[in-house]
Amino acid sequence: MAALTESPIVGIIVSSFTDAGPQVIFNSAKIHVTEDQALNLSIRVMTLIGEEVSNDIFGPLPVPSNEEYLCLAFVFRVASTFTTDPRLTERPSIICSIFKRELKRDMSRAHGLILSYLSKVTSEDLKSEDDLTDEKMKEMHKRLSALITTNPVRIYRIENDTYVEHTGGFYIPSDAYIIADIQKQTLFMIFDRHLSPVRKRQVGILIDSLNENLYRRRFNKRIVDAEEEADRLLNFYGLKKKL
Image (cartoon, rainbow, N blue to C red; front, top):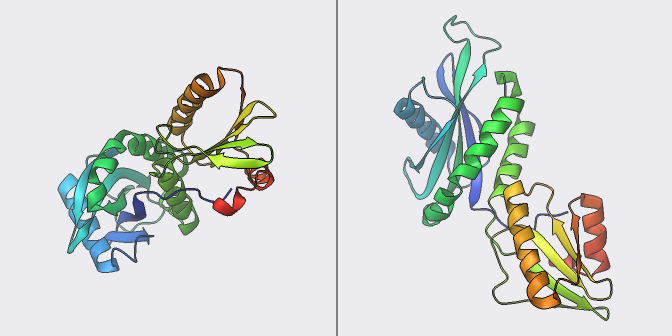
């Protein structure tokens, strides 16, 4: 299923302490944060935090020479696979989530969610410096962005082959579609496959409220998060064009 919403995160900058010092490994925010700014940010964060701290998140922190953006910096370690310095058996590394300054409050609220995800992905998938590949960094950016989307759930009532979008107090920040099919008496919950468990629970609470207040608990609930089935349903209900 195509991405349904936008995230406050405009990119991530991943850096590691190499034999020659801090080095930027990956920068998906380069249209907002230049390579020089990314390197200066990495040096400052590593200097500020030191080499003893690991598996923790800091910020929001300023991006050097860039008043428009801030970052949350997650610190972790990877095993060195090649080094000429016997002291560097592990490389201190950081993941900086870059976002606009005006979204500081939103990102601060997502602090725990980001920490939980990055702690898990770094411990399971980023164990050595060989794991710091572009492919893995791109996937991490995609999943991290999907974790803290800001646009509302799209809720549709389907009846007699037509749909009407609900408005009012049913919205929460998330990345999902809810479709009420009157003939089938079913509430479909369609999720992006990267949506976090926390967001899924929030949408579950929303759909229970919708079922109770509008449909007197008569509707069944069906969760759809498999990409092929989600695309099929959105096409079937004529909503694919709205993605």
